[in-house]
Amino acid sequence: MSVENEPVPRLYTDLSSWWQLLSEPAHYAEEAGFYSKLMVGKSRITLNAVLELGSGGGITPPT
Image (cartoon, rainbow, N blue to C red; front, top):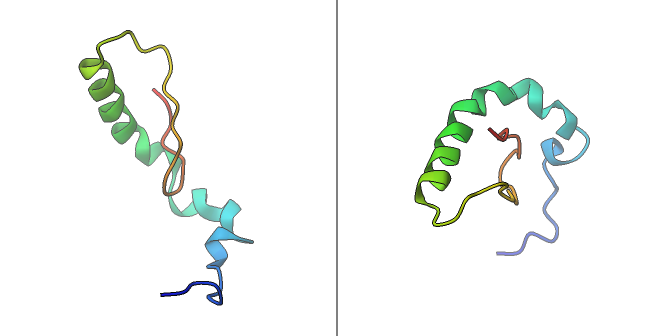
């Protein structure tokens, strides 16, 4: 399947700045807390920072 000639959805271009109106960052706080506790609990070393390379909307806030 080729995507070369497929139009890019507007939410990825001119409407991308509107994403937070559709998916409020505060809705991701519980998810961020879950992953933070999971990583800290399973890590063999002290975690001072985690590099989040992103996926999806990229607005999961750090805790």
